[in-house]
Length: 252
View 1 (spheres, rainbow, N blue to C red):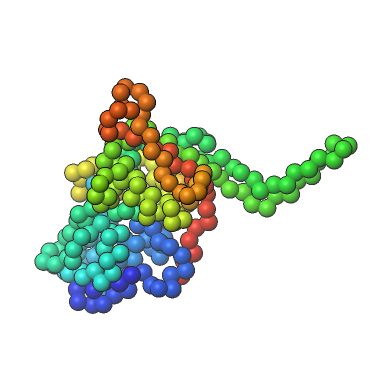
View 2: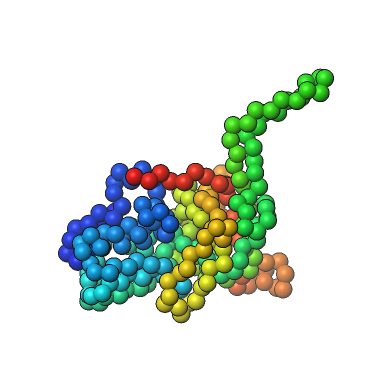
């Protein structure tokens, strides 16, 4: 993925990247926002900052005016922008990144208590002899989880334009493509906010996870709430996300 930063042709994500990248990750080599910020600083663009704001959109800023020409349109789309940037020192994306989904409410895990990765599933062969002797052999352990998000606003589930911020857009760009994701708990959100997100750590950061499809072909579930007459209107949706623990992407 490339872009022209203040007239300088720059590589943001190299072609030989051994794994994938997230929109944001504590490891810079796995973080799209940090990779762009590092490329801007290398130009140099003074005090370059690329951050996710509390309104869920990406902000790109510096001390002085700068330009970005998106030579790779996928990079532009993943960051939520719709046009080249010029004439200012701070820009906020038009759309929410398709790599980010917020249900606007806390999660309800159904496979384990809050703040835990999930329910362990052991790759174990277990046998019992006629005399009662037991033997087991284990190779791997996975953790499975189902996150339930009841009464999600329809605007965060699916819209005709699918410009970003919807579950189905996240499902398309991340889940069905076997990409990895983290779940961040207790993130402050403000649709009018311009402060950067204070990303949680410890048990408020769970993952990495991968999608755990229950059937083929893969399709997201669609359910309206059954109570309060909401089954007859498009106001709230029930989201259930089946996932499992997965190894982290490799770094260069």
